[in-house]
Amino acid sequence: MPNGKANDIVELSAVDLATAIHSRQVSCREVMRAYLAQIDRLNPQVNAIVSLQDPEQLLKQADERDRQLATGICLGWMHGFPQAPKDLANTAGIVTTLGSPILKNNVPTSDAIIVERARRSGAILIGKTNTPEFGLGSHTFNTVFGTTLNAYDQSKTAGGSSGGAAVALALNMLPVADGSDMMGSLRNPAGYNNVFGFRPSFGRVPLGPAVEVFV
Image 1 (cartoon, rainbow, N blue to C red):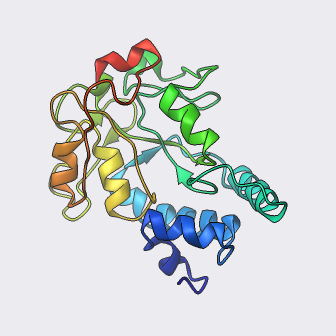
Image 2 (cartoon, rainbow, N blue to C red; image 1 turned 60 degrees about the vertical axis):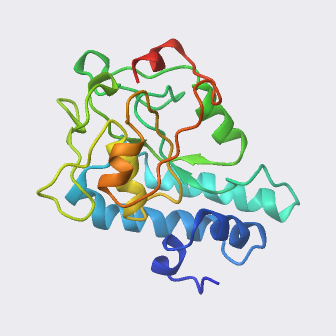
C-alpha cells in the first residue's frame, strides 16, 4: 500500500489506486500532486500530455473529490483519477485541436460521450494526450504541439495515433489512458511503449461527437 510518497502512488495499478482512494489510504489531493510532479519531471522529455490545465485549479478539484468521499459520496471507479483524454475527443472548457492548426483555439462547449462518462465516474481532466493531425498516421506529430517521443528511447517514435496516451501511461503520468483505433491506433503505440492497448469491438464504445469518425 502507498506510504504517501509520489513514486509509490504513481506506480500503483489503476485497480490498486482506486482501492487506495476509496479506502482513503491516500487522498485525491495526494494523488493529483503525485501525478502532476511526474508530469513536470518527465513530460518535457516526451511531449505526451498537451493542454495541461492550471495545477492549482486541478488541486481544488481534487479537494472537492476528497470532500465528497468524506461525506460518503463516491462517483465511481475513477473518483479522483487524473485523466487526459486523447486530443480527438471533445472536452468542454478544454481546447480540443485534433492536432490541427485550424482548430488550435477550439474550445468545445460539450464533452464527447467517453469524456462525459469519465467525468461522471469521478475523473479530473488534467489536459489532453497528443495525437497526429485528425488522428491520421502511425507517428504522433502535429504542427500545434510537435512530436511525442517514445517512452524508453527518445530517438524512436511513440507510434500513433494514440502515441501521447501510450507514452503517458508507460511513464506513469496517467493511471489509465483512453485512445481510439481504426487501423492500429491503440495497438501500435501500446506495442512501441510496452503497455497494453485494448481495442473493443467496433461500436462497443459509442462515438460522439461526429469529429471522432476521423480516428
